[in-house]
Image (cartoon, rainbow, N blue to C red; front, side):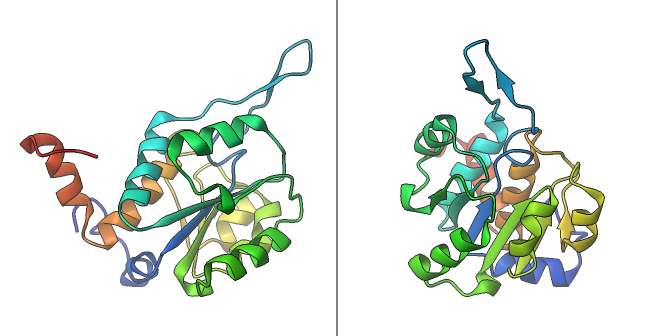
Length: 188
């Protein structure tokens, strides 16, 4: 372990079991702000560090899914940019449980192999069913109480990168991944 050596063994074990991470969008991959122009066009800001963390997960055999209550072409575009499997993207699900159940059927993962990262009470029905529930640092207080772990960073401010690093560190991959950046080895 490199960065997260002070985590409890229970959390490390949960992180080691993760094969699929589900991220909420608004408040997790963004800071929750919604921007609209005069024509009603919606804009969101995504964090590039979070994006690199997601790419690291995908390149290291951890699948990524997105479940969001809103519908947005921006989410589709961001997911394509990060190379997230389009079959694992669910938009427009205010009740996220049907999307989660479909995801379980599609992937055949057991609940203990799934992590969910959320920020608000709408995320709790899934967070209470997965093997590793994670709240972002600026999540609703009740969500934090229910989560297995809370990131230090907030949604859209590096929380997803923090999650990715912890999962990869628990699986003893992070040190080698980051060492490649200083040794001149080929980086994907």
